[in-house]
Image (tube, rainbow, N blue to C red; front, top):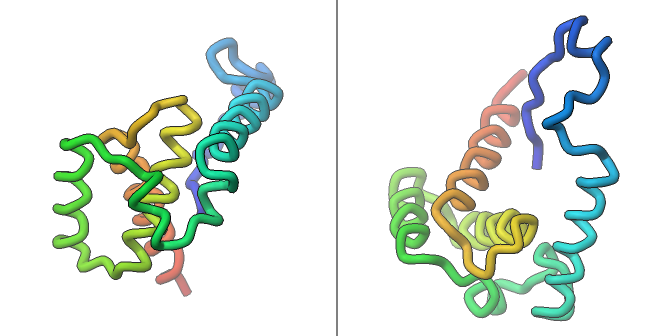
Length: 123
């Protein structure tokens, strides 16, 4: 997965870490908590889920189901892509400690996928 990160201005670089930006330690703590949740729920990390396990552990809200259905049709996604997106969605939801995958988690995962496809087409 690749994420586009905007360039910082010289002023932003000189100011250091702005007050509303989480520190690396804060982010690490969120990741460790998400990994603990994953191990407690399914005994492994989301990325290690088999296709047959995805439906058991990647529970979607109704609005999330609707958005994912639209994306599947619009982008003609394969079953493999579908499962990969769901695992990323589950991880995003875990980082927020959300018990189910919501529409915003689907949107975020689809944006990562869009970036991945865009970068793969560059020369």
